[in-house]
Image 1: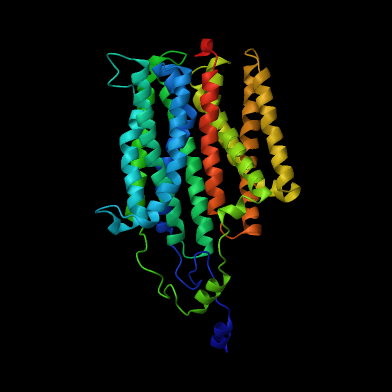
Image 2: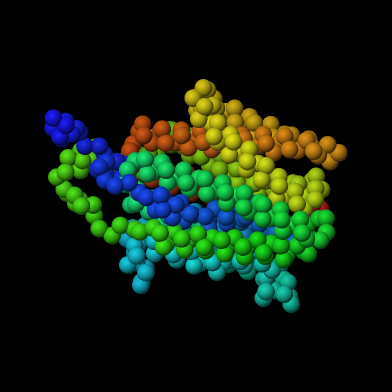
Length: 432
């Protein structure tokens, strides 16, 4: 009786088309995949939080040139994303593609980052005798462009490997949760490390004397990132063959999946949807709020409030912890208020924090802790609700959302680069 009941059960489809009866991913496989993006996570926190401070305060590059460096990096990142995505699926890397196309491109990115990242937070060696502005600009643009190539290769290949190795739908959730957890840990590590390095250095304010501390930061995150990338490559196997039921297999699970497939909506049809433009703008504005505020917060602390140099480490850490707490609470908030109301409320929190920053006086600078918590919590809820709204739109209109995420990401990166370049162009000269 029991066997007959089992046969009458409908086949359960997992997210990537594998039958639910297959073996689960082991904890070791999940761990190794989860740490494969740590190199990028460390670099993201370090670059967005400290690159502006390093270039303007330590290296002494003009504000406008710093903006150009940022813009070149963001343009490189935005236009390489679709190219590397295409390459991961179709182009083989000589000698190493036998381990898998995606792992091969991931390894290419790891090697490029290993070479480029230390130079990102290092003084320009060719410019040591003649620190000309144009030489400095060319040097850091070359490093930033190279770094963004490596960053994009790691990011795209790691993301595209997820559907290949996830066996069940629950694996998607667990692997993404691991990736998010490691991202949070990476932020704690970067800010904690910077706090320790600056705390042990001489002087009260940031200037060219802190170049060794920033160089140490670049070297350490490069080494740690390389270690975890090696762990990823050793412990993660990219499937080389089709699933055992085949591309045109007659297993019931495959049949249900085949019937459920729909033709993806074309880009031309997406352009006719008003929701597409609305949510692309929401996506772009949300990411700009997060990235630009992270970039300028350290400069605000040292230029406006004249806090000690260690403040550029422990205040971003407070923002990160507040962001993690509110991210955990966001599910309950959105369930109670809905996505749109939650997003508006979170936006109000961030705007309130920015107004607080504007009117903050040096005499009452201890109050800045409240504004930091408000900002971190606000943009965390903004991010969660924004991603939910985009996903709901895609599921409601069309089952394929790669084009939407690609277009929104392109706008996000270009918007970040252009805005920072404009702000740097008009940055007060007396505050450099």
